[in-house]
Image (tube, rainbow, N blue to C red; front, side, top):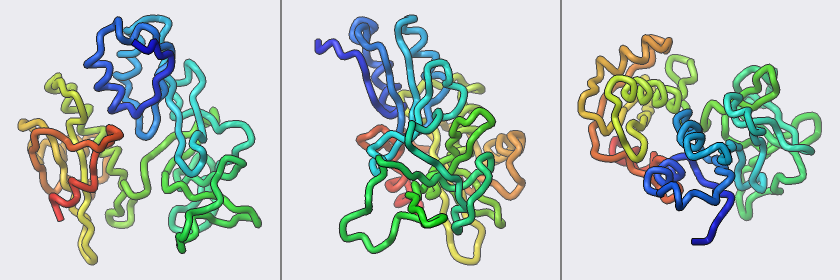
Length: 264
């Protein structure tokens, strides 16, 4: 009806649109711009199948940086979320301190540039870190740069848990198990098929609780998938909860806060 040419949305939301819309309804769209979460490989294929005039571009940004930080050039989809915008700088910093890491080492992404905000209203905690007398915004995201200068996102700092001194990405665990389930069962779903939460209690190893919409996966199988994928023997699923649908927020992201209330 409105003949839009560019659509910006999280990948989860875009996936639902592509499933529900007819080719005629998407005819005028030239660019699909995704962000807010990792874009799955199959989404690139779905857009490609819509026609040669369609492009999907993945970027990375946050509200505090107005909002874009990096973006992929056309054809760079296999290289993370792209390169930093002009006049913007990124440092990779120790998430537990202020030590600057080499760019190819995983750490917290810190940003400096004219697009970065000056702070939160009435917020006592300082969101910035000072390095060499300059302020950098701590994004709370983890990542690193590849040898081509593309930023690779590892996940949210909040979406990591420490197991025996090792930082474990809950998102990486989800991705490995999800891809294996899809390859084994060819399951068709409108949204995510797994979600992982960690229960952390002082003095004990974190418990990893896996939510899934499939009823065929058990705990031993899930842990074997992780082992074969190269995860440490310390990284194990403690419990599997089968649910009808993985809850989503209005943005299309998984509602981890709601899932956390189900296990705490």
